[in-house]
Image (cartoon, rainbow, N blue to C red; front, side, top):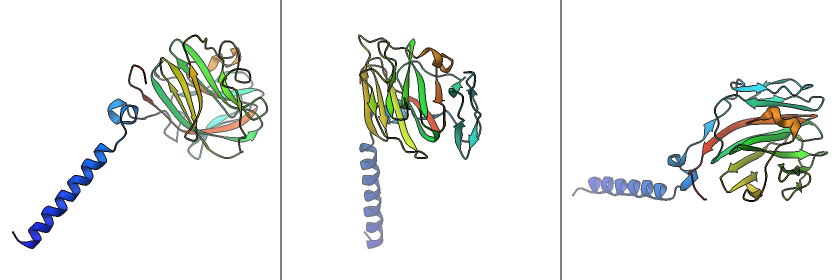
Length: 222
């Protein structure tokens, strides 16, 4: 065998090994395309199936530099999804930031089976984080309640995972909420009802969201 042919064979074997290692190293379950790849909810240019939520007194909503800007309203402002969306076994992700104001810049209302719940970031004066509502208690007064300092104009990465067993929430890649569902009652505050089944709202605050997407999760326990 010529030396040049030997080198080509060795190079081909190395490439095959690298490809196999990459495949074996890929994450499994919900992180693989077979389990459901990410599906966009916003193309960065148009609202599409997002419609301005009729809260009454809401601020202006539009697309600004690849993000949906939800303008400050008298109280609530927001957008509600008009397209299809699952009720169970999914993850939803987005980036959100506060542009102006001192209250929640992201109130993400999402379905949980036949019920709904809201993840509040920066409520009650700017820092309260939690789920509204658990057993009739809102984000300021239940087991998910926590206080976080949010910086104006900083983007925060948000992920909510919904399964038949629990709601899990992540902020900038870190788990912040792990709420079991068995034995608990979910609801949303009455004034957020127009956000059903999927919506994003702000309270007396201008906020922006971008990179909205979701993916299905495998059925069954995780």
